[in-house]
Length: 428
Ligand code: PLP
Image 1 (tube, helix red, strand yellow):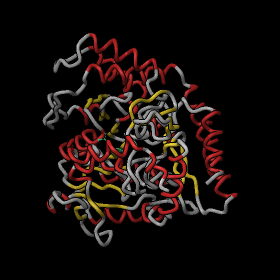
Image 2 (tube, helix red, strand yellow; image 1 turned 90 degrees about the horizontal axis):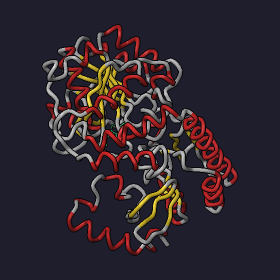
Image 3 (tube, helix red, strand yellow; image 1 turned 90 degrees about the vertical axis):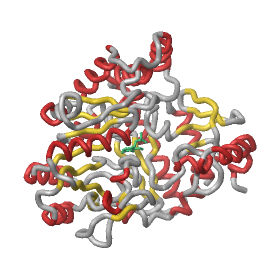
């Protein structure tokens, strides 16, 4: 029996949702299409746990796809939101909270002198690409196959038939005209990237990358890859954009860029900086960011940008991380223990797999590693993953419902949860 079929209330809610919402969900991965079965509807969350519509508890290894690094409904964020709400929740005019937020991001991130708040990661990446184009006067940009940068038209592009071809839209509604300015490279392949840049000399505004990927599962940059990418950008006058929507403030308080020792020209942020509220941001060197309106000609705006309640939740979360550096030590240890559990239990069963991890982001691939790029990730046994996923779900452990996603570990996960996960894996 598919364990999710027992979840009667979720089933009923999903049926009802499909009458009013495309596919019954407001973001596609939530629909469980790549693992089969019906999604679980949740009603509340606390610490390490989510509670479904029937009040069944699940250990959460997604944490809202990253934001809930402190665990769900952490008192620090809840108190900040309550206080902000009482003061009014949308002014469409500047507030001091926005300065606090900008300051804490700038002080944590040496590559960022100025930062603009937006409402999602998608807005951050779209705006960063527009800025890079405006700043350089060039039209094309390069992204890497398997990296996801939100649902902006110019990011929904698949690789063409060869490295030298233009990209092709991978969603109806994206025009060939848009696709032709997006070039696709292979993660961890510096020679291929150099070739692509050489073939488009003087035309590339930016290269955008997840410095440690989460969206094809966790794939780490090989030694020298990001260094080579940085040098290539410097040499060719190309802006290097780190999309740290997932990795920002997750891999460390200085984000992936500090951990890896690479300085991007622009950085995109989201998830953790909103503390669970809809927030994104992009920032970088003053000389580049001063091109953003109203200080410069590159237009970008937002009715709800810098929303006071969202700023309160985000600032409280970032300030907690700033003042409690032990959070990172703790989630590193928990994540290492979780990786060991997966490795030892699946090895004992002779199931081919590989765990790839950096800090509190990890993916259990159903294929022996290392996985270095998207093509290699696609070779995983997705059916084995789906069986594993449903086994854990049925026993109250909530994994991302796709082989090609990262798990995000929160501060709230402790020995009780790790022991339960181990027992569940053993029973697989
Ligand atoms: N960039 C990365 C690396 C992401 O992982 C995501 C979303 O998961 C985005 C951008 C888009 O962010 P949002 O879903 O907030 O628009």
